[in-house]
Length: 293
Image 1: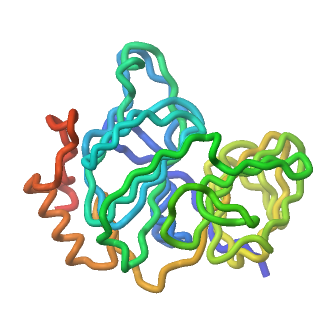
Image 2: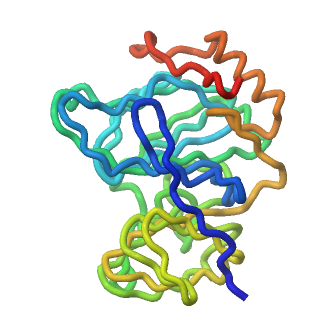
């Protein structure tokens, strides 16, 4: 019996003035472990008149993970964080009971050509922490565990696996792992994994059983313990997953919760503009989408 449960293709979606490839949620698979949302941004080149501007918008009940392959984004939020994230670094923002943030091209790049490419990810919080106090952490790329095993490069972006732990302060059992290889390599890592697992191909190709998979695909496997695949030369993939929650999670726009009542409260709070503002980015905001009202 095949260990392949589902193949998810990127679907085009808009995040304001920017198009992305949406991977999660998917109608047949809403979550993989605690991972509830994944967008692939770019790669895109912008000229001196174009900029990345995701206007102030709210979140509850989740942590966001931003990981760039290329480019730079200025993060600002309503708890006072203001930091530029560059390629290889991690921004980890835990919304809890509510936070507002914006993501923009830094001022010094706004009138020049620039590139942007990366992943935007939401990780749902355990039920007992959905209303926690918001937090923000920035992790420099030099602090992310990186190692080489028989010519294959590994990077543990978040969570715990391979007896290693990322400094990203996660709140549930999960992992997000980058694997790169310049040569053809058979990878057998099932004994190290747990819970649900997804494999995202950024570049190159992967053979699983008798099938070949190409970039912009997620392969969800039935049993993480049977995770085995052949990487073609010059391939980069991301393994993500972990222990699923016992309760269902609901999504309403940028809000995640195990309670529909809490989602409705957050929606009304944003419509009435009673969320805290971002210092220095108070004048613009993203309206609640009319199609969801």
